[in-house]
Structure formats: C-alpha cells, structure tokens
Image (tube, rainbow, N blue to C red; front, side, top):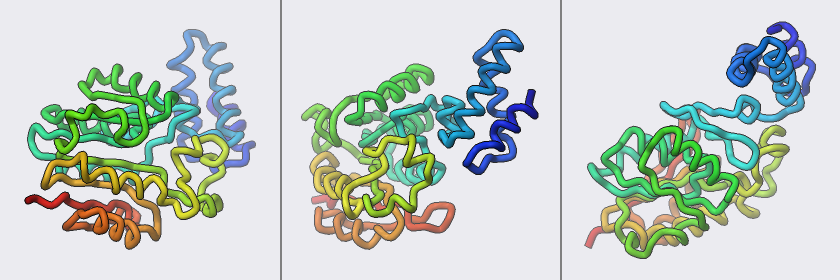
Length: 267
C-alpha cells in the first residue's frame, strides 16, 4: 500500500518529503478500522497532498514545540520560526505573570506557553471564528487553563486587564500584498489570506498592534512580535515612536531578522 501512496504523491505538482507516504499511511490507519478503509482514506489523503494542499491540513495536525495541534482549512499552519518567538516571550515572562497572545490562530503560541509555564496567566485573542474553533479544540485536548476570546487585537479583553499584562506576544500577518511571489503556492491556495497578508507594506496589523499594546502592558512589560524579512528597521522605529525602550531584534534559525521586542518604560 505504501508504494501506491508514494506513487500518488509523486504524480502531483508539489515537492514531496521522503517520509510523507509513511505519515499519510499512519494518518489513515488512525482513522479506519479495516484494511479497505485504510487504503481508501490513505489514497484520498495522498491525492489531496498531490494537488498541493499543505501536508499539515492533509494529516490534520501540526507539530509545534512540544505540542501536536489540530489544524485545517481556515487556520494558519504554525511555522518552526515561530518557536523562536515563544522562547523570547518565555524569557520575558516573570513567575506568575500575565501574557496575551494576540492573533492566536490555532492557539500554538498561547498553548505552548501555557504548557511550559503553568504558573502563568495566559490569554489569547483572534477575530476569526474558524481559527478559534481550532484553538478551543486544541485547548480542550491539552486541558490547559488558557482564556481564549474572539475579537480584533485587544478589543475582546476585559478592561480590568488594561495595564496589567507582563508580556504581549504576537505573530501577526506581515506579508505585503505585492509579495505574493514570495509565498508558496500551497499557502496562496489554501491558507487564509487574512492570516498572511497585511496591506501594501505588510505592516498594517503590526502598526496597530504596536500602537495599542503599550496601554495593555504594565510598566516594565514587554511586547514581543514576529516580523517579515526586511521589516526590522521599520518595526523598531514603530516601537520607539510608541514609547517602547530597549528595542531589540532577534534572528531565527535561518539567520533572518524575525523578532522585534521592546519594553514599556517604568516610571
């Protein structure tokens, strides 16, 4: 059966990894109770992948740090580079601190932090009902105490939390509408545009985030934000204009500027 799956995968228009046939077969075996059902499901999954659907959508799961998250159409697939964002946020989060993940999508960032720092008070927001269904399902599967709210940026948070967060963390959309050529066909055809693209310069959401975050942080709190290639200087300027200090840039594992962070001044 594996050879048939591999043949279907090889017939498609996307580059296939060496273990994808094994993963497709394992996914089919987890969903079926008979050999005939396994074969039918496996070939259906292989055809979807061969047509360019993201592997994580086909399998229904994505690995992120120590988590196995449910993902599918309507939610962004968590990327390895975002694990660096989580590391920076964890470094800035004091014991028992409060943190909000703005634009949580599948819940990857918030749930990873909640799992690794059970002492923390973790909140998450997103304005996509589809994405939040995945986030809520993932939270239920992990049995984590993470508050997930629907709304744009900070809008759904209770007013009582204004000025009380120790960390605001976000992986906002940051690809410009003119850079579709830099995005893979599987992303363009399948992942939600609103989670990838952000206006002409890619900074429309980042600009709003930085401008609003300062009022939700306690004095001395940190904003930690993922960015796109070539955006670091502009985003550092946005941080400084908003009043953040100690702004810094951190690279991902590939060597690209990927994270900008800044601190709200203390009196």
